[in-house]
Amino acid sequence: MQVEKFTNFDICSIRGPANAPHLGNNPLGWGSCTHSTFLPDIEKLDGSPSCDSRRIEHLRHSQITGANGLSITKSSLHFTDSSLLVWLAIKAAHILLGADDFAMSDVPLKLAFTDIVPYVKPFVCRFLGKLVKYQIISHDDLKDEKPDLVFYGDGKKRQYRRFRDSTRVCVTFENLYPDFSEADYFMAFAYVRHERYLRMPDWAFIHDPKSLIKDQDFISRTLKNRRDFCAFVASNGNPRRTRRRRDFFQKLNAVCRVNSGGRVFNNVGGPVEDHLAFAKNHKFYMAFENASFPGYTTEKIVDGMVGGCVPIYWGDPCVARDFNPKSFINVSDFANDDDAIAHVLRVDGDENLYQQYLQEPFFHGNKLPDTLNEERIIGFFQRILENRRPRRKFFSLRPGLFKMRRRMQPYLESVFGPRAVGWNYTIKPS
Image (cartoon, rainbow, N blue to C red):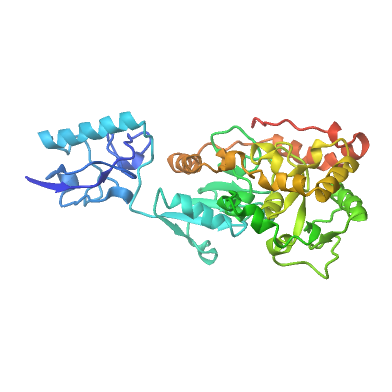
């Protein structure tokens, strides 16, 4: 009977047969490992039928199985003092760490992305790569391959429905309610309390959030090339759904010229390609969302911040959860648009007041918000890997009611005013 030594045994979790069925009849709870080194120079018993000539080293992407493909079981493992010590040490570390992770396999996880914006893929791969090996199935191979995880957006083709046996993860940045009858997991903007939901607004995907942390030279850099009054970029000009944005632009532009670089109200000779370069020449940036809903903060306000402007914002009533309200002008804080415009002109004419806005950090305490906490994001992907096929709801009524209310909102606001139509700040999924 041979005893070999190995080092760098990285402990992440110990799973039993209920949670890791591919470990077989495993009452001892052997599992696989990731992350930090805890047990150097451990001796492993190598003589049982299940682990014959299986050398275990750096188990970041391995599970404890034999060369014949069988998992280690109690009946096939002959204890000695050293192997018993290993098992007890692993169990103790599991209890102390409170780890409840999945067992990682040598076989790479197959990922597919369909009907989704391109900047989601690097985000997903960045965090999944810390947990498992993965393989991205190209769009041309989706007909022949069966992906383990399918990430999809709100595209009209709905190709994700072809993968009934795959775990579906919907990543949407539109003003839509999570529909758990279609997807197993959701990533979206709304404040929803659900273990299979992760709030992740689209500005966290499009921009590097760390670029919003201000340094000492921010004001001096910002004031160098400020020649024009205000910038505005929008592509959706629906007269009914974006009425609030259209009305405010026309009012503000009537008082002081607003340079519009989008397809809506364009007055700079055509749509601009680089929104950030366009914003850097202006003191203010008009950032109006398509609709007002808690958590629905898109890249518009961040475009102005990255461009070094003071955003003039309207949209998310909970925007102060993510951003410091003293760093931008929130139109919703004023009784009407005329009062908001009067304040913008006052800030424009008072250099000290303008610099007060620039001195304020964009994030609270000049630190990334909890929404972008990496442990929180990794925990969400861990839940996906631990429970790959949760029970989908057969039918969900809330998404349809939400869509109906969203479509009625412009009509209700035109009759009762924007403050008469309020939203609940936190939604509990059905």
